[in-house]
Image (cartoon, protein in one colour):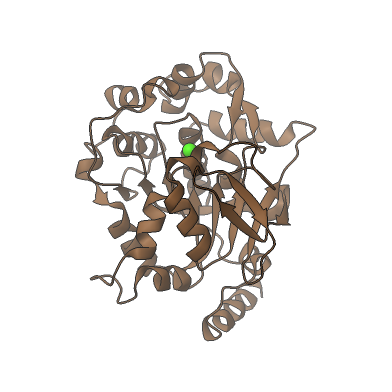
Length: 329
Ligand SMILES: [Ca+2]
């Protein structure tokens, strides 16, 4: 019955050239098809988020269609392949912002990406050997049902802005914005602070012009998870996960063994896959981006932009996330 209702909702949206409501999306498309756009290398978060997506993919809650890297360092895409390979999904497509370069993330989390690549099995040599991120977005989106894909933006918005600007190719005759409108149900973005940032948040400040472009022109609902929404964990992962786990290694390198620290990217993954069970959404109006990447929700009509509220006073949700990261594949 639910599948029939979902099909009707999605067909109606397609006929009306609109996006289905957030609530309809949450009830439909299980396992949920997701794409992750990551600044892997910059913070430990991205490895944890990618690990969760792999676990949910194995459990049949999500379908991880592909991973797009938005950092320039060549090791980033190979580090994604390390995590996917560990969880038994070595062939999940990986795209990269190109051209890549020799930059490392030594200022962040002790450059765990390069160290993972040295220590753990994978077969993608690096971002220069990966598909171009925008090309891969277009290929993967065009193969999915209309209004079905949830994009998770966990870093810079550079690939997303380039996707909007992309032209027709061998995968789709639609230009980028139309392809997104056709295939994407919504995008969940870690970035900003709500309802207004005290100072520019890291992700939005990586490429403020692209962030502003996405807020103005992205043609589906947007849901933001801000700097104020984080969980503190890592102690158990870095001491109890299997010794051959690249997730354990990342926490050891980035935080140190036995240390709990703040993570942000895991929350949007949970929301994207499981919907509003653990969260409430608050209308943002329009997320206005200043030149430095700082943000503010301002009243607007015609936009469906919301931010997440999350609380976990019992710590149960945080523990369940850490349980997922502890799991043996
Ligand atoms: Ca990130």
